[in-house]
Image 1 (cartoon, rainbow, N blue to C red):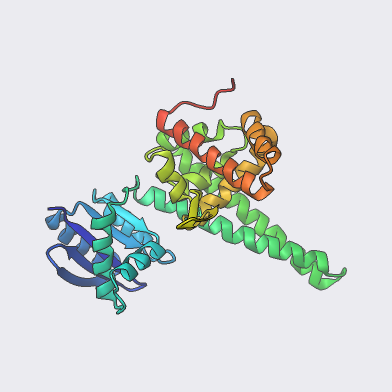
Image 2: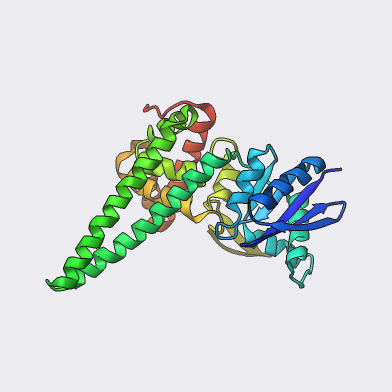
Length: 309
């Protein structure tokens, strides 16, 4: 019988449930607790370990367990909540959440992403910091544009200079990290071979969508939140829409699709055909981003760079 483990992660604690044995225990979400967790689960040898994305608190646990050779998947919390509602599970405690996660993993059999432990975690942290800096930079530039000449404006300009310097350092650190791994260098070069995908978008996808190349086109589209869903009931048919998935890689793919719609001949033609067919620019862009993701997934899977016809 398949053994699955659910871990409810908080800032300081890990609540762990082993299915189907019903074993339940708690540990600290720190180095000592994780070392004990690896030892305990090493004896259990679970087929899959699931935990919800919890604003970053899960990253250390996921990386540690993955580095120990255990199969780990980080789940979308909304999917687990829907599953709990389907079971009519209204009570909510840490131990109950861990049990629901373990049961969800057993029922849904989610694809286990390819995780490489500390290096992947470090790249993800650098990308998250870069997004924070970009947000601050945009805010400061908007503030500068509204201010009259004077000391306050000069202060804002100095902050912008510092933020630009920090962004340059983050980009250098990411480049150095990728250069340290031949596998990552090859992956970045393959992604960046596609017109519309530069090094920055390639790095974002490597950090936030490490499953690229290991899943089929439908699964990778769902993971990025680009899979279309249709609402229907009886004879009523609603419009298709996208929902869920990971926001960070989806944003990177939208930027790539915008560039590709101008400079990548096949994708430009695809985008324009949709517009000519009466689709809105938003729908056409989503479809182009999904097609771009399919292309990137195949390129990483086959390890063959982009080739123009």
